[in-house]
Length: 253
Image 1 (cartoon, helix red, strand yellow):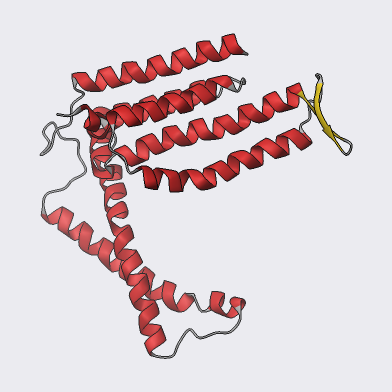
Image 2: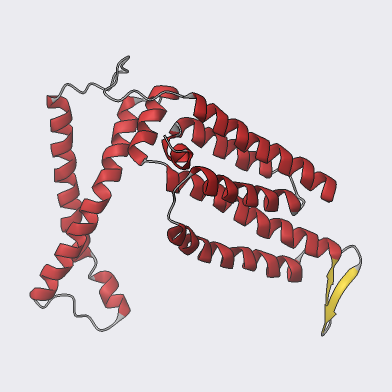
């Protein structure tokens, strides 16, 4: 197996734990270097061990970049701690080195947290993730299958929403002029959409009962998921990136 697919094949539960631990660890560091180095390290991990669509990744990062920029300039202008040496001044606005340090720290945190989230989201199959939660983290099968069925209903609900809107337009309904009228008319779409969702949920429940689903834990699975050696190797690499970034950030700050 090519190493470019290791992150995609990694045990989802282990990956989830690593991402959560990394985020909680980053929350304790207030220097700008640690989140910046973690952000660079995560990108290098994805370049080496994944085949994600970088165009999709870039589209996700556009609003994240605007959010980071918002944190940056609001912290620079409205920071509570204005101590330190003034490094920039313009028309009565003074920016100290402490303000700039805090602003960069918050901005890079946004990038670091977002890169970790995208690493998980773009390399994890939702069904394998739920199955891994059941097998490795002992999640209740009732809750796990409810989440799985709900996730699979989302594209169906979207298609039915589009069909109902098209049907209303063919009948000349939904041509309101004002926004508040269109908002009130949404009940004509939401009520049949909710009724259809309830019917689908009932059919799914009957089908699961007919196939012997009781909600009890099982010792055997159709597709057992295990933690392989390469999963532990990736975990060690990610932990190394986190520790090295923390140490380097502490020394550089």
